[in-house]
Image 1 (cartoon, rainbow, N blue to C red):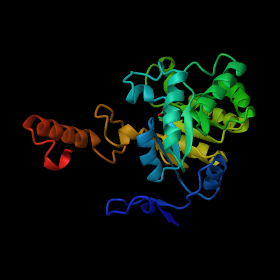
Image 2: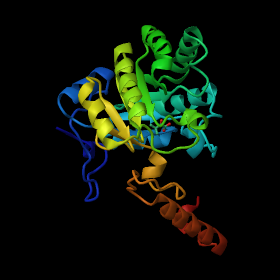
Image 3: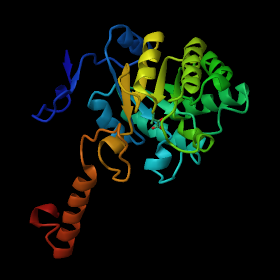
Length: 285
Ligand code: KIV
């Protein structure tokens, strides 16, 4: 047993910080975890400092999500995110991580035109960022591209259900696959992605019963977000840390209220500067 407390001294509040295996997480290790019934903890990160913290706290997989376009850049959708921006975020995160598997999103429009351009963009993203694997949104329509990317030696994570890059096609961010026909399509897509060689699959915002069915049918790990119990869970780190007050879907559990903590700290700093209390005698040369 390895405790994260080896890195940071364990405190009363550090419940659940037990890392059983300190080796670098690989796609092979994730498959083992599924076979052994060990759940996978995944969170997003977009920069070096956050990635270091998330990694040292014991997360198994760090996703450099194109949700960077929302939480880092303030866009309404992930559509404006570019390959160069993902290379930048991926590189920042990869530098901060020792243990977790680092997966980076291929952004909108970089993997649909042809198998060849998908492989070229995937190679550019891998080489430029230093991440361990890529994630692509979609099912049967992109299986050919996924096969090409995997044949270039790049591990691919699939993503089905609510796929935010297709928000305009869906007309919003509502629950997906609630109707039988769409649920059957999603189930077939999940099998197709496993067959194409994906090492794991994210299911976003679908009914819990469908997630359960996909988890039992697939050998690869299934990671849920708003999809009920699965082989693992993923959340956007800014959301679970309470940095984003305007976003509170039913599936989100907040583990901190950093919006309040940071506002409070910054407010104190401003007050101290204005009053002349900072810097004091001990804070100067
Ligand atoms: O971009 C992202 O953060 C994601 C997760 C929500 C799965 O794709």
